[in-house]
Length: 106
Image (tube, rainbow, N blue to C red; front, top):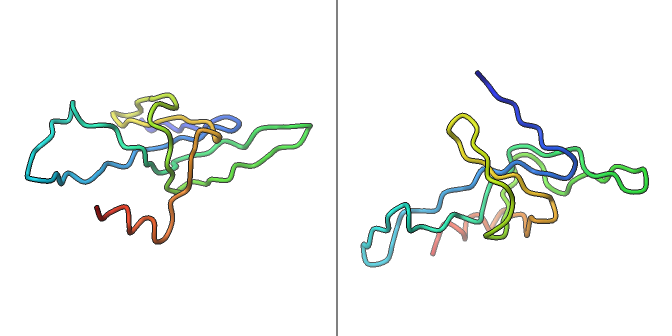
């Protein structure tokens, strides 16, 4: 069974991007002690909010990589996959081009 999720208004469906498993000194950190990543990929967007009778489109689109605050949004689970639903104003930045390449190196 396939589930389609379409966020409403100015909400965005995000899949967290997993961080690299490399740790300095070869120390392995258990999954329960790891912090959840604050970077994600936009999976779906709403139509935007309506202000003064006009619809205001979102600045992000499906496929964008974004940064968001640590304790924001609502976590949901669909077909054993975790997602986050955020309001557009909870998104801190879009990540593109050189920033993507730089985020892979530490």
